[in-house]
Amino acid sequence: PSDQQTRAFLRAQSRLDDYQPLAADEDAEYDEEIYINLNKLEPLIACPHSPDNVKTVAEMAGMKIDQVAIGSCTNAFFADMMMVAGILRGKTVAPHVSLVISPGSKQVLTMTAINGALGQMIDAGARILEAACGPCIGMGQAPASNAVSLRTFNRNFCGRSGTPSAQIYLVSPEVAAASAIRGVLTDPRELGDPLFFPQPENYPINDNMIVAPPEDGSGVEIVRGPNIKPVPAHPVPGKTVGGEVLIKLGDNVSTDHILPSTANLLPFRSNIPFLAEHCLTPCDPDFPAKAKAAGGGIVVGGSNYGQGSSREHAALAPLYLGIKAVVALSFARIHKDNLINNGILPLVFRLESDYERLQIGDELVIDDLSAQIHEAANSGKSVMVENKTQGYSFPTELYVSERQADILACGGLLNCTRKGK
View (cartoon, one colour):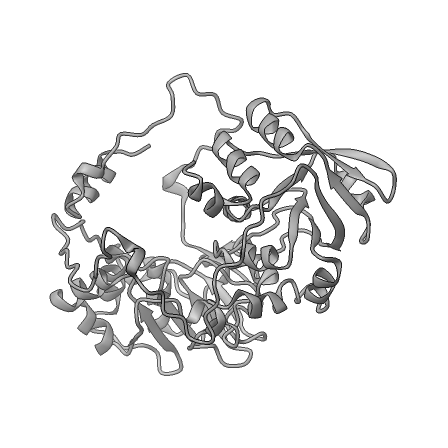
């Protein structure tokens, strides 16, 4: 629920009018309840090559490290930066460790520059990077070959750092800063009592770099260089959709598999036709060619399909290649939403045996698409998929709201918005 802590933060950001007291209904029922004894929590570390490969820092303490990267879009808030500066104050990073810090925003960078925390981090031996994507996706600061890198980021999939042989571990800012000083993985509690930095009563608001567009944007020119292409068209689906099963994947396929985010591809983020040539190539190098030859089709996945970063390129590239649906055992939540926003059906197998039975090359068809989508949203009714190749039909689940059903029926959020829905 949004609590008084939320309210205090919005007040400090001069946004008190945006506060809404949100909470579950008093009679809400839950499928599962999780109780956490905060007194028993201790520093944790996610080991290569998955964020859920978690151990305690105590189990791994003493491991020699080569690089520490703090910040970016995760763990780079003002309080995080102050904690790091407090730990580094008056100390020096171990000689064999490279420490880089990315403040989370211009506001955070300004505040730490004004109060002296930025200088403390620099004096300790940290290099300060811009408030933007960087080391997380190998855009600079790629670790040395076989290096051990501690990062406060949220992803550590193999090769994502830009160095396939590197061992990437995910930790908190406190663990990262303490380990940078010692040169080995360190429990920050060994350095003394924990530091505490209260939230500022007011955050500086400086929007002088924001140029507001005119209310009537019809005369605004969109400047596109030769590497910038328009957003792919979102075709409105007909009454019947379908296609060939182009690929069958296992569990935990990440957005890095669906569309790699390597440094050589990052310059083409505004060029979906180019990026689409790399769609799912870590799983099948010929996938883009197969998709284009078939005129699009269907992707079949296992559990937790689409885990990882929330970038919509992992939905835009399949859209460009004509992917009509992804049928999986389960989806990562954010990727499912991105598929919906781009008009791609995220269907969930009701039975694992149906997943096992499907083969690459099977032709799948969904009839009465709009009716089935809206029935799934309103009554939870299954969406039936016909396997014309094997001659049977199987049920799938489509977990969507009424608005998401409208988006899918329109062929995506852009189409839906144009219609005023």
